[in-house]
Amino acid sequence: MPRRATIGDRRQFGCRAAVLLAMAAGATFVPVGHACTIGVASGRATSDGRPLLWKVRDQGEYPDNQVIWNDNPANPYHFIAVANAGDTLAWMGVNEAGFAIVNSNSLDLVGRADFGNGSLMHHALGHCATVDEFSRLLDSTSASGMRDVHACYGVIDAGGAAWMFEVEDTSFWGYDADEAAEVVDGVIIRTNFSMAGGGANGMARYLRSVALIGDFCAGDSLNYRSLLTYHARDFSDANSEPIPVPYPGQWNQNVPYGYFWTHLSICREGSVSGAVFRGVEPGQMPWQTTMWSLLGQPASAIAVPIWPVGSPPSALAGAPTAPLCDTANLIRDLLFDCAYDDYLDSYKLRTETGRGLWGLIFPVEESLFDAADQLDAAWRLRRSSVADPAAASSMLAEQALLCLEDAFAALGAAEPVDDLCAEHTDGGMMITWEPVTRSVAGTPLAATEYELACANTPGPSSGGEPRTATTEPRCVIRPAPLSGFFCRVTARSNASSSIGPWVWVCPLGE
Image 1 (cartoon, rainbow, N blue to C red):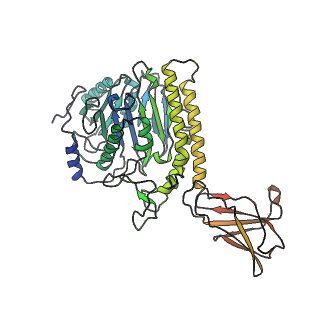
Image 2: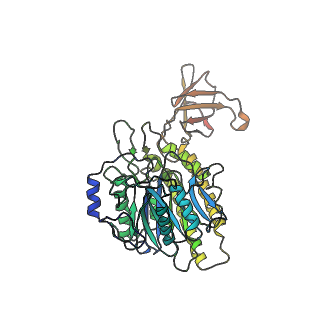
Image 3: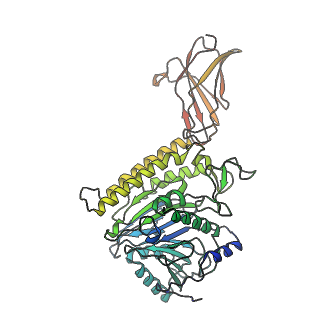
């Protein structure tokens, strides 16, 4: 097996389904801290004939991600990229020439110099316009021995090229997606192993990704929408079998009903961002390459389009952190609120009736997809009346942020109490109501405390009304009021509180 390959070397090193399945059978699944899932597809594999590049980033140590704009005059090309908040190293991005890049660590390759993944991708985005130029960059850094990487890199360019590179400190191997036939023709997928290195880290995620992408291709639906909606938010078990959402069962005796383990999933607790890059058609401007960014844990985030034309929208940029990522992280904390690591409350994502987080954000995200497609079509026709890409991205990002903030409020807020009953009891009046068991979004939520307020006249002028705290959905008022009166209940959960409306109550029998 050669230890070095150029961009012209299309040997696949025996990477066929049978070999991969054999690798999986003997694989030992070990925890991987920097475990990402990436893929690249040539235009012949996609539903619209345009190349695609994607990544789900797993780096739980850096949950605050943002989109940066690099316009350093020393670089030939300006670019946008996903970076850790407050940093400039690039972990996925695209430049104004239409060259896009993603990476995943490959634990079976060697790296031991001082030009790491983030630095290499930052440099490539600033200096490479094509896949061929990226290959030459790898050539030069191999010869100099300055590269400290053990990684797989997916890349596309405005000319339609789509490649996967496996790279270590002084060697690399290149695979053309247009000629690849690893599992699905025209598609190459990697997690945390390489074909050249022969490892098996991340094999459960790899096999699940292969199955998903294969289904997309079979249904002619491999596009940015299916990758964002289904692939980036996919959950699976140790056998790479899909986990339904909601999960109608108890994973084990230590966790509550509806929670499942995400550690081996494409989307898991340590996932902090994601992106899908949609390449351009012949005749389009290179800057029309679209980066769909998911800032935050993908299941809790909403996708926003951005183009490499200038500073990103404020919702995506760090000041000091990106508001979209901040809100997604708040939602992530609600989803992963189990005492045991990596367990997610699936009923917060989606209930049997379709409510929950996804029921709130998916319709808005679909509208963003439609808006971006309309812009893309108008730009192809060179319509002068169409919004410029920077303004359009800002508008759509603000829409996404409002949606996510509203979803967070609904997900964490207890369902308001609006039905009270009153009856006389010894020395007082008993007020009762149904216990709060759901949030406004329809997800399971247990109220930890209630507060009952009473007033003769409700509204802002009724300040100073008697208030009583209780952990049960009932309360005795002493002494008993002589006639009907107004009450309202504030229900509190661990996440937030919800104030119910003023309700007129009249003791039974009056």
